Image (cartoon, rainbow, N blue to C red; front, side, top):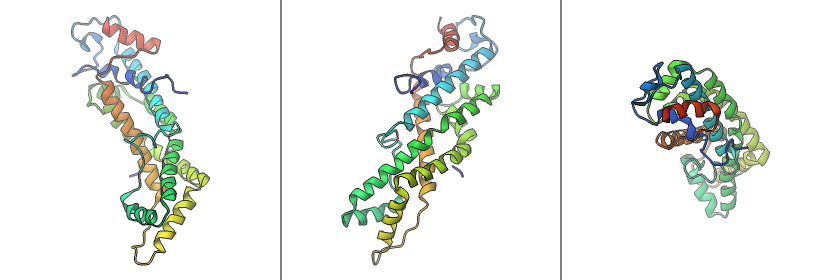
Length: 246
């Protein structure tokens, strides 16, 4: 399978992201009163509520993209750092033993920086998916599990994101010399007598690991935000969420 922060604090946009799902068993009827027991509708209809959700999603996904695409966004995050694949671990161990540890470490660093560069192009694709979201899509997100929105985005955008990530990863690797470094490391290893010859599609690996990391961060933030206080950062969100809490 093909696989400027908007606000100053990481994740603050995502604190709005799933605010409508911060209570359990939510449904999205035409009457806001049904969203939270005992609350009056305050004149807000389903259309306004869904508009608030879409705005929250746009802010939150934009913020998440900026978190992972910043310098060291992958490299310094142990949850999504791209490490050597199992297929290359033996190669790396052998190369380190013959004095090439710095080369192997640079290789890992450059893989992560390539993913960070590629992630910059994700925001527009997420925005397009949000614009195409139907009322049925929004209901499923509001009523869904902790990662309902993440699964929605992965289903709707992964293939498009792959097409964006792959050429950027390849170009970034070529630019910083990682393609040549990898070839050098691979040729050096394969030239050692007695080792099992290794082949590996590095572009494919970094692209898919980069996407996995992006969706992992979305899922992690989504789960956390569902139980966190709401941050009302726009007039529409203040209108929607203010009505629900007043």
